[in-house]
Length: 93
Image (cartoon, rainbow, N blue to C red):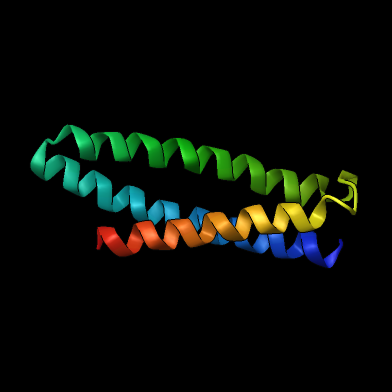
């Protein structure tokens, strides 16, 4: 497996972990407050988790099928998403 796809897989795994934590927090907040905004964030986080699980599968199982020229782009997208999820976690906690 190419090093860049390995990095993308690693950060995709981190994204899944962060999203599980965010889903837990949003579910707790939504149950306490019954606010529509929190429920919306919960739905968003669940859908993004599904996206990241499929992405993780794609990187892990089909990483060799992607063009080598695409690898840096995939890493950049995954790392940017990780940064955005960290920021979201920071403002949530």
